[in-house]
Length: 483
Image (cartoon, rainbow, N blue to C red; front, side, top):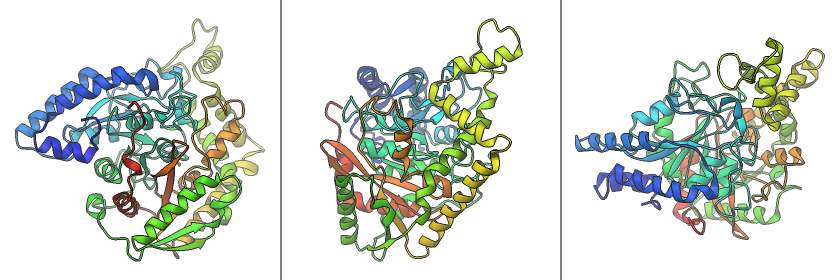
């Protein structure tokens, strides 16, 4: 059962080949047996999952149907879940149990999904390796000595290891797409505002976006259909009709115009990854697509722009964690100032402290114009580059990451080298456009991902291209040895 995709599970449940409770018990056993190797879960909600599975079985017995009814999933541990610890991978929230469900959690539960628990992540979603978590690093199931990517590394590792068929993630600068690439999954970052951020603990509010991680584009379409849509509780949610993501999957690619940015294929890209990308291009051309070289001239400024804007927003968002209202509180503070200082110093990890300090500096008097305002101007230029490019092409294709998954601890002494791994993904967040990573091969036994970008609210197009590619390739079907 654990080898089935979300879509296959839906068909099996409809055909009564097994019950949701039987499936849930089987996966809970796998988690108990295999996850100690991976550390992908922070909290396993066994009793809640079994109750939800029994409820799903009862709904089916009463004649209800639905692709996610009884389907097991997991949530990245920044989606608030009522009565369950929501830690954001941080000591400062280790004791926090949310009094409500995030909109994403609520919608997936309403669709009948069964949540098996909360998944490990970089602390407050700050990281590219899932090594900054208070609960320890997550391991990549393809090579347990390597990182699974971040910050949604727990979600990616759990899905890749067949502990569950799909999971939620969040993407601020590539945190769905990058781990998808490093663990051989399909991961989708929707258009900013397509999926509600209400109840999703914020890192950088103008960049964060929730989305699905699964093995196939079809499964991502199933997840997105339940997650997406306008939410009046979220001021950044966009009131725009949803596409039928499943219906769009089978559209032929004849006449599809693919853009290849010349900036993607310069220094810094592993030559073998470049070869895998071009092999994917050849496969799409055989399906009827045409290819054109394009330019994104301001891409070179993306990393410095992002690493001013995101930390600046984080310094504001994380000011609420002060030891007063909820979360970790230091012992025996001498006064209010001591309470603030020691609660934050003891509760936050090194990477979070680093980004808070960078962001506070960028917003401080005398530096706001020089750093934050300039970064926002660059952001606009990057957006304009995409708008111009999409006048010429339908999708943009390139590598998801410049390198393969690296060894655990390899980049800890040089945070900037880890930041550079986001070079191809962060532009989509700065511009607010949707992006998808799909499996495209292996190098020395490690997965390679190819990224697709599309105009605003064209998630259906991304899923269509990925699905058609997955009909003529089998990279996405490969499983890591031992899982």
